[in-house]
Image (cartoon, rainbow, N blue to C red):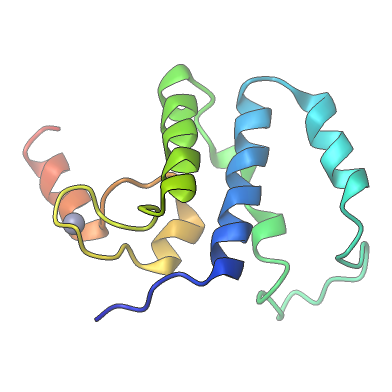
Length: 122
Ligand SMILES: [Zn+2]
């Protein structure tokens, strides 16, 4: 059985997705508010070797495609967090690897299914 995501993981993904949604929808003021508002992680000094906590903060918004489709997928991912199905492949119902979710928090499919779908011209 693949490990289920912990509540802490879900919270981190939710934060990342919320920020991504704000970035794509152009709501930069919300982004800045959040950056200033949540002061529980120490600003500044980050050890590049320690990715345990800072990882999600570094979630690279620049890599995101800023388009309607990505925005829709992010909103759907946030819905899945709410209804508890986040992190489950929509195709095979297996858990999506956490590493994959860190790279693509709005991923709907596990890497195997994604590759398969891409091969089939999805
Ligand atoms: Zn799958």
